[in-house]
Image (tube, rainbow, N blue to C red):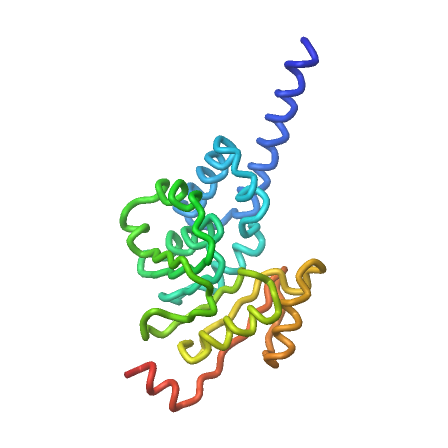
Length: 219
């Protein structure tokens, strides 16, 4: 066998191994989630979308996120990127609506949205704007997932923009907590004096809503 033919084979085998490791990390999730994640990875390789391959929510954190999202019907994500997380959250619960914000409108989300049915696409709203702009309606939010700029000031502005719209007991989840390249996340949490716990790379804060604010949301 020629060396030139061995190299592509070796590369293909390594890619297959990484894909199976990825899926193994998602074991126990719904068939809809697993099927989408598998197809999304295959499509990403075909499109040479290395941004998705290297930057989407990793299986351990995705499993934590899906567990925390159980029975939470309205989720807001700040930082759409290529929309894998938003799509996965929508797939995991047929009653869930996901609103996802990103100031950068990328072409990739449309490719991955084509992998799911209209019933899922109709429950995902994509907003081309910074998360700090806040909501476009008055619907209370059950979970706010922040995976955006990772900058201290921007993260603070995002939290403050959404806090008045969080339901009592809602969760704020920050990605890349304590990541050495993104100290702004930890700094923002400290400045906002948010308590909570770390699970994997995520920081989870449970929102306590003032009674007057809760009455406004309920109304």
